[in-house]
Amino acid sequence: MTGLKQRRQRAITDLIRAVAPSSQDELAERLSQLWFYVIQSTISRDLEQIVGFNLRRAVRLSYAMHNAAQGLAGPRL
Image (cartoon, rainbow, N blue to C red; front, side):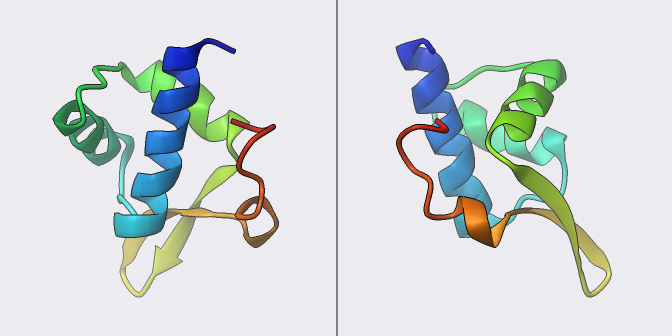
């Protein structure tokens, strides 16, 4: 895994835990604020690799980390 990919996936994990973005567009916007410019397919692949999933909270859909994956920091990223 490249250093850039690892840093991007760490940023995605941190964003999901901190703000629970509701769409890949929102995640892409927040990543761009951190100087990661990505397309939707990149985000989709990254989410698949870091075990992100959609979670419905009240009437808002957001991304969340699976409880079992929250402890995985090094090897999966």
